[in-house]
Image (cartoon, rainbow, N blue to C red; front, side):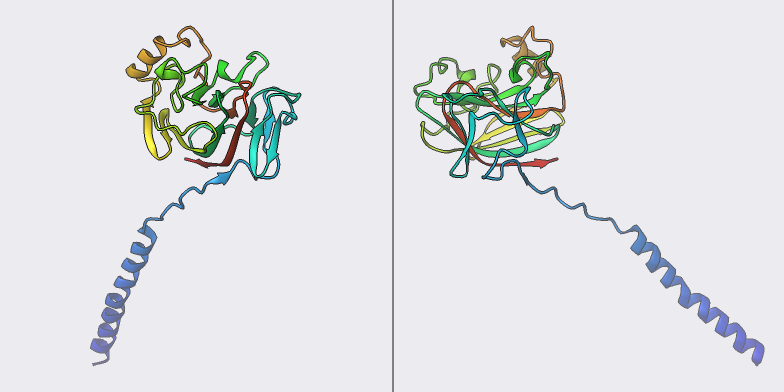
Length: 238
């Protein structure tokens, strides 16, 4: 009797332990959910912290903070494009812009900052900022507000008039570029594709060997000699 009793206890213990091991294994194998990236402010609404004038150590006086917006005063000393201190490769950039009558500016990304290059657009790709109605540079579709400058025209003109705020979402992910203006997707293209090569060969950048050559770079707000303001500038790294 004792022998049978001990054998029963051992069998019972073995069978009761198996589910516990399976449960542990199942718990260990459970997939983890990645935390979504959060948008980070690039402009605090109070200072030019995190920015500097291209090829300069700090932001020059031409760029001022006025009522929570980042504004260019084209009459002030220290002209030049304003660039982020950090470089970015895959990201989603959100901001609002407001251009004055006849004004011209741009959002330039993939900027390689080096004294070898005198301007941000020598290396960087531009999303155009423009007063479509009265700006001098409004003759070509590929130069209108929201365009992939001199390469791809916006699919439709959704820009608001000078003096009004326009909202941008600009996404770059593994070379895939998507532009939205005021909630409408207006540009979509893949860098390095046959379509991209065709766009490039039909633009003024055809012979610019350093244009769009750097996957990671600074983001710039262009000084084109006109009053322009930016606000609500955030970035999400993808």
